[in-house]
Amino acid sequence: MNPITRRPLLAPLACAGLLLSAMGTSQAQGSDFPNKPVTLYTAFAVGSGPDAVLRLVAHKLSTQWKQTVTVDNRPGGGGFIAMDAAKRGAADGYTLLQLDSEHLAAVPHLYKKRNVDTLKTFDPVAPLFRTPFMVAVPAQSPWKNMSDLLNDAKAKSGGLSYGSWGVGSPGHLGGEWLESITGVRMTHVPYKEVSQLYTNVATGEVAWSFASIPSSQGVYKAGKIKYLAVAAPKRIPQLPDVPTMAEAGGPAQLDVNSFVVLVAPKGVPAAVRNKVHADVLAVLADPEVRERFNTFAFEPLAWSVDEIGRNAAAKSSQYEQLITKAGITLD
Image (cartoon, rainbow, N blue to C red; front, side, top):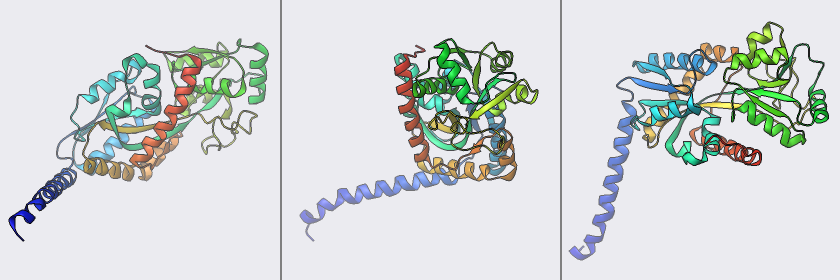
């Protein structure tokens, strides 16, 4: 082969060499991860259900990785406090962040002036769990099912109130969705303190609220509230006697839930992300972890990274419609 015919092969060979080098670097990054402490930021407060299970996951990962895994709580500010802290970290897997589906899918539509897109700032890394929500009403409420609640709401035309743990929360957007499906009008009352919300549901100061098991079990076990339905297509094993939304006479398509995942600053190496994903799934399969999740009615998830993105996109589309229709803004 003469010099003229040899020369065009040099560029492809050089590119191939660079590609192999990059692949080798990526694999090396994954093989020795982690070789220093890892920080898990969370947008949830100390003592909350998501915090409690994250600490167990962190403990299990620490044992598995033989490195310190620290949980750093940064609640408040619609999730921005935790997100701002995490995004200052390097995209190397040593900074991770626990967020829920509302941080991923609702925040960009609630804070349009901030021009934020959570999934353009962070990469999905690993799934954690999904939690269902029940419809909670005072224990002495005359309502026996969702048909009773909806008929009363229709008769009062906006006079019936429902509470939530904040504007843009699943409890709020779930209520907007219920109104959109059924055509009834109700009045949303947001609370800053979750405990106060369910105390006020118990006393009838608000007529009803969506509720998770961890947030409402104290009032429920005290016999002060009851659950009319679980806003899901299937009953949950923790409350087998509570009917589904459809069984209780509500709209069958109403499925109010929230999922929680781990993300990392954008650009985390694929090999590192794959290792964290695999190791978290191994932790979620641990019987001790599953038992702990079960006490909160948290369903461990085995989603791939792509599935996290697809589920977040589906939530985003739904939330965008609800938020736009209701004219909700937090700017």
